[in-house]
Length: 319
Ligand code: GDP
Image (cartoon, rainbow, N blue to C red):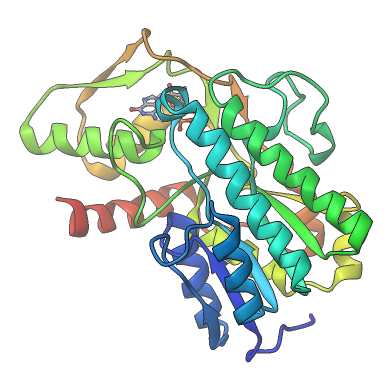
């Protein structure tokens, strides 16, 4: 395994987000000492000039682009222009600046919602742009697709070593637990927790409970990012000629089964019912992880263990 020089400067864009925080911890644990970090108030990635200045001044050797506007199914629906526009700006600015300053390798965080709604499951990287998207998150998906394709174009035209990792639904300590904007796992964790504490006997679950989702612990995703950062280019090119790698745990479950698991971990038998006025979104999102498996990476944390750790964090920080 080729190791990146521990003194190399690595810019982690979005280091205060759910994934960015875990990436920083993982890089530090692996001995990297020269991390470049900027909060969004120090560096607004939506504005090209400050991004160009930052790259010209600091010349990062490696970049992990984990900065993005993210949110759950309703937030996407309510703020379509932000989900599309902010993500397009952020990634265009960073990708162009990284190309201009000669970054050695960049990892761009994609998402599994880029795949067509009806693509065969498990979703292979080659399903990209083979059919229509799920309507509820198309704004975010179109932006991320543009980022994936831009990485491919920069590689083709300028030889940039830019790789996209398609992360499945992430969760973990430091997640967004706001009920209006969060993803399903933190939202339902909070709802079941509050029902237990308040002695309520019913939790409202959006949609039919039938959609299936795959969940990946944020620290496992960070582990995959650093693993790919350290993998030699010829190995990556062999398994991922389109520079795309799915990252998931390889298993999915229905939202109903997720509720049962959350009940067990949180220690409540509070009943739940389904609010059919809310959207289901895509029926299933399970990724084919065989490319990363071939390279030797597998998600180490089981869903139950990840939920337990996240719940411990939630109780310590949010209650
Ligand atoms: P998606 O994976 O892009 O669809 O985003 P979400 O994580 O927001 O939603 C996943 C599924 O969980 C959808 O079918 C939602 O309707 C369902 N769901 C059930 N209860 C909730 C909830 O309280 N919050 C959210 N965000 N989704 C919920």
